[in-house]
Image (cartoon, rainbow, N blue to C red):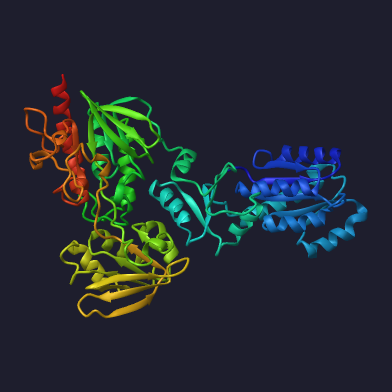
Length: 555
């Protein structure tokens, strides 16, 4: 934490130098001593300190200054730092003004000029003021501050990106936080545009993209080398496991993730059936542990970074990134995972996405849903985990399930927890047929598939955890996919396909190998995979042994 500030203001250069010298001599090891030669200059300094999230412990101000006297300055300064101690430097004739200031600006003390010797006339007074200030001082949050509007999709995007990449930040809603409004007023933006991201060093970004945020917080988005033994696309459990095993066995490994390490599993609020964690762990905890482990073995993690193309040239596989840069590798593992199915065909859903309608994002938005009624669409484990998480904050959480129960798709331990939770309700045979609201979600229209009856329920928050879609279109024409886009591997490869997708070698493909030799698929993106975290970790781990076999074939 940066040192709290002692600010002294005086238009007399000699006095200003003398008081600054004496303050630094006694307090410079614990406080930063700043000075200003006018009230307006001091206000500019305070505005910068406020934007930088610094603390001001004491303002020691001369009363007799042209344009703005000490009391007038303190009246404005109080709006910025109301907790700072306030003292006036006065001449004998100014004592009446100082006494009035006690009532007008809650003046804590006034000091007569000159203050020699400071050991008797200055330091005892300042010591008492600073001791009192320290007793009530609460250190400010030192990280990133995000000023935004809860119903702004761009604000949600920034929060979700920082949360999933486990970057601490403080959320400041302009509709509920007076300090957020003050900070916006202090910026020199002609028209404040949200979200506004403030950094500890005073820098700021307005409506930043994920790439801009990544660069600012120090995430790596550019590969350090042009060639790797093994490249992995996708940073979910399968990709992270492959990265750990590949790098730990000596392969130069790069992992490329388009959003945040952890993938869809990283958004899970609680995983309780993962081996070795009897009390469970969150998806973000699992991702954090895996990322630390991968980096310890030397894995390069590029995030956020997206792959847009793949081409094969002899023994090399070339990956084209979204910024146009190409990197090459001998072996490639596709751990692309899947994305939540969008419900954009339902009226209102697409328009209100990010403004009350969310895909996943339970951990990002849960606090904002305190004492509200929350609705969740989905009947699998991810929806159940989200429901249990929201039950800690929301007044009531309602699971909307198209089937007749949760038993077909949800683990029994979760079903039992949901049944035991007093503020969770499950509505079977129920779908959303419309989302209502102008600028944010205000209500949902529900329909019972058995009776056809409809009901409109008020709510500000809908979270969707249904189905999955592989994003593999960019591989079309090169890698075999089924009709839904899932990748085919091993013995499932088809023979009746276009010539470019025929298996070209005499040896049969390895278990997790696609029709392109040296290109493997693991995890949820592979057809026939078991959609569980442990299964993804297992596939990513064992795939590395087939990578070694393939690399051995090249020798």
